[in-house]
Length: 322
Image: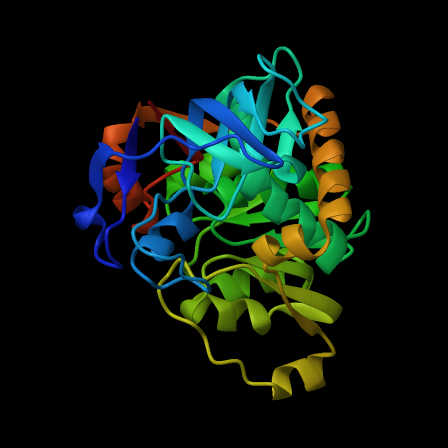
């Protein structure tokens, strides 16, 4: 079968589209013929050796796939041949066929598009875990989402609204701010003079929950805009710069800085993860959350698509298709 192969930890243009062994249906493995493959920011970090974990070389990147079950291991009980499913893994999904462990395979509702299913995994999964478990966002609180037009940012806006929050989306261009507003943000702001803008729109109170997948200088701005008893969520560092946090701010302003490592959460708390996904699918079917799919691209173009994602040029979810 064809797959995207990382032969070494190297720049994205070193990825190879070539032949790779098909996954075997052993133990609790479910083999899925891919209809859609999700592209995520961590995928690009992984192939460059910049992520928190490093798989053995060579490897196939990719953590999300949706498609049809074509083989199951002898230990698999919850799905059968022909079922449409979505699956999560640390890597291995940029391929025509993907093997995934049964606990991380989710049956799909009949009418859910494969691309939407991929979006609900890492992007919406991260935002849901961040806002529900890590910050315990409450109805009536103010949520500020940085990177609001990205796949994870759009998810955070929609989930924030589903939880009853007032949502401020922050994005870099007028077009991206329009996307954030269409996703449900009550207010859409730019990064220029952000501290003053947040002070104005919150009546000097500050934000109760800050959602930051960007890092860099903007993290410091958001930290100085937190409300008393606020929770500042560290999601990632799309700007490429890991901020240095002045801990006196947390002391004086009385807020918490909370790390969000969704990948570790899925393995350490699989039952909670499964419950989260069930709730997200329910919200999807009820129309409370709706992924924005910006585009679908050939699997062979994975390097170019990843380059765009890492350059923060995407609005919404990007999908690969074999």
